[in-house]
Image (cartoon, rainbow, N blue to C red; front, side, top):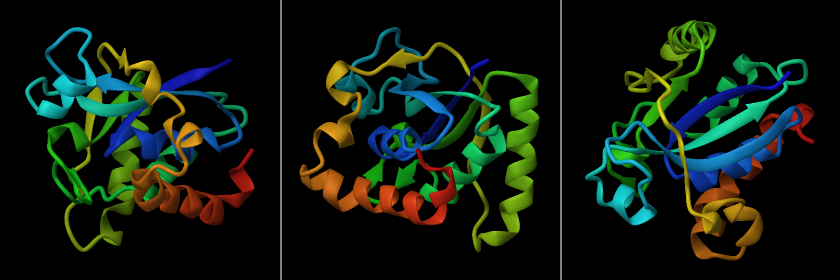
Length: 174
């Protein structure tokens, strides 16, 4: 039986590429969540006026990969201590948020943040929020890294995160 979680931690291309490589992840969809505009476009979200976050919705088999495992990868591939920013990507659309779908996910996310807080020199700013309507991004954003590996942003930003996941979580790769 499949479960769903939705995570925001910077550019959705990075998250999508990292999570798509994991055993038990059945599908990853890039999109937008947490804002005030219905069916937002990439341009609207990038303007910062919609209050949406770039996010990925992950459909996974909990018998193969646990929710805690997904959160470990999430915290390994982004900086949860920078408010509304990941590297050179700046704005509330790049915020760090765990959007929970069940009370169990909420409790697990809060426990994980408490568990890892001491590992950082700055406070963790990752929010834990209830999932609302998820709006899939435009088709050209789906599987972006797989389809555009030579694009400069992919080479400079996405690829290092994928390499990190492959090295640190090798036993969890497809």
